[in-house]
Structures are given as C-alpha cells and as structure tokens.
Image (tube, each protein chain N blue to C red):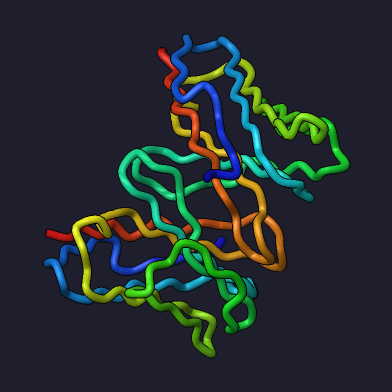
Length: 110
Length: 111
C-alpha cells in the first residue's frame, strides 16, 4: 500500500486562484517532500518540511505538516498557467528511498 | 549547473529482450536512486546506492539488477522484458539524505 495518499486526484482552477493539495501518510517520518512533474518529464523538488516544522514557505508555495494527523498540505497562491502539472508528496522510507503519493493533477486555466 | 543525465531517453524493445539504462548523477552526489513510473501512476522506488554500495531495495523485480560504478554512474539492467515493464524510468541523485534531483527519465516501450 502507498505511504502517501493525495487528494484531490485532479484539480482545475482559474489563473489567479489558490490551489490546495493534501497528502496523508501512514508511518512516522522525519521529513516530507513535495515534488512537481510536468507531463512525461522528470520530477522537480519543490520543498522539504521537517517533522519538527509546522509550516514552511517558498515563494508562492506554503506547506503545512501535521504529524499528529499524519497529513500535509501544499498551497500554491496566485496560480499561473505554468503551474499546470502533477504534484506529489513523498516521504522517506528505509535509509535511502522515497515513497511517493498518488499525486494531484493540477490544471490552471488561463 | 550540472543535472542528472540519463541515457537513452527513449528505448523500444521486444518482449524477452534485455535493456540497460544508464544514469550519471550530479557531481559530488553520493546517492543514486532508481524509480519506475507507469502510465498515470506515481513513481515507484526500485533501488538505491550509497557510495557504490546497494542501500535500499524497493519493488524491483528479480529480472532487474543495478549497480553503481567507481565513477558513480549507475546502470539498471532489465532482462526478459515484459509488456508491463513499459514505463518511464527515472534516476535521481542526492548528497546525503536530502532532496533528490531527478533526471529526465528513460521512456521504455516493450512491444
């Protein structure tokens, strides 16, 4: 079974709106990461939040982590058409491995 | 800045053939990872290497093997290919246990 489950699976918004994606995981973690993937391309690391952090910002991105609920959210503010992509959360498993969630496909309409 | 290099970018094979995918990590990165991503699926971890030694093993079939060489490049060897092996194969590298930098992927099509 997957470590991370994301919702929604797909999200369509208008340019300028905010997009929120959620991720839940099952086991204890020391960090959670968010990645972005344009269709058929490689994944790009967006942000890493450690287990002792509750919120982290990077540009238009805001990530929260609730270890008591084993959940995280990624907020993209003032979305742009170029933000159209799939977004995955990922958690470390083992010594050197990541387990990815099922991803949210974001479509930003211009 | 240098990125992770993967070759080939596209590969077409017949069933039961073998394939070798190559990955060149970012210089001074000590860990290499391999992931498989089927159509519409999330990336699945296959295997990782730290300082040329196998570190973690995920859902890698017995028909697949991988190694990391003295120059830190890695190869994923896939034998007895099946239709279900058609996927994007990503290599990633990192320095210690930090963010992973992904290559552009190799798209393998098995006919």
